[in-house]
Image 1 (spheres, rainbow, N blue to C red):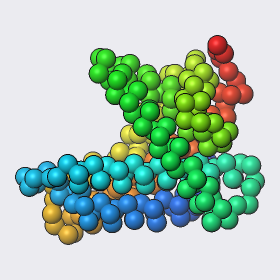
Image 2 (tube, rainbow, N blue to C red):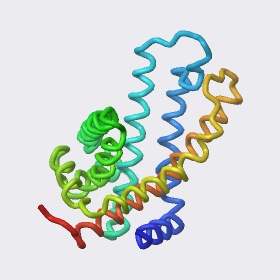
Image 3 (cartoon, rainbow, N blue to C red):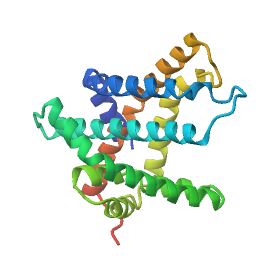
Image 4 (cartoon, one colour):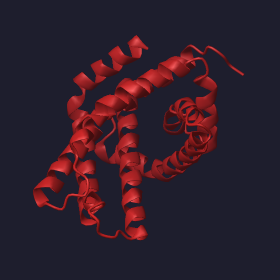
Length: 225
């Protein structure tokens, strides 16, 4: 676990500029769409149409998935010493977007079912499936196969992955503590958008950390069914 943290932090420090270059433009576009949908104004007492809420959630899912895919491809390119252009990475990310989102939907349903069963099973399922994006993107597995592979290789590493999730989630959540929901002021909306973009930048650490974990658990399996 300490190796994963150290190596992922070292990568982020070295390639922070590449991470920012990936995250910021996509996150700005996401925040622009959310602002036009009134995302930060929801909760002011005004009625919000269900279609608007679902559209906003869809925007978040699509753009967050695209950011995560691009970051995973960045780490893969650096470690494999692949000199891919911006357009090549972007085209690969777009091709993988729909399968990636489908996999995320499956994870969400599995986690929600577990959360309904006294919460802890949902957390356990999420931890065991946290490596599935890497099997999908790097090994080209399908959504279901990626979930199975993550479940298989994460066995014996549950606590390591859980603490990795906890640490990176706490770090990325720091800017969101200052976000003001239900605010209609232009300055406040802009401030919220900046904080949300900063949170997306910080969450890149988790992508790098679990890429390191993905490599490690395959080379050092503790239990194989």
